[in-house]
Length: 128
Image 1 (cartoon, one colour):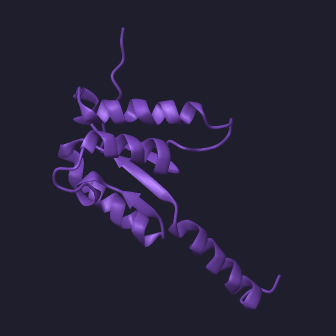
Image 2 (tube, rainbow, N blue to C red):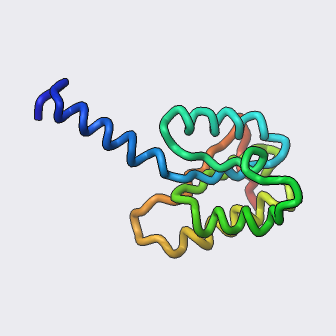
């Protein structure tokens, strides 16, 4: 290996190329849209292909079907954003998380699919 030589440059180019097509689904509550957008921008800067519903869904498109298809068929990673708001909601976010967990069940042991992100400083609810 030559540090700084042509081999090192080619290796970094290959890594960048391999990242470019990696699709990452971001699941978030509407109230956390700003944080989701920041994450999307950061993932794009890292050379990944983040999927955010506000950016990808078209008017009159069957959004439930498109979101399911993206989670199940197109995403290499699934990032659910957990906040004090999202954990209290009963809606689309919970459905997306369930779909992400269903996909994860099919992955071999040791392979990462779900990357949870906690927004803010709060504690998970516990049942006594």
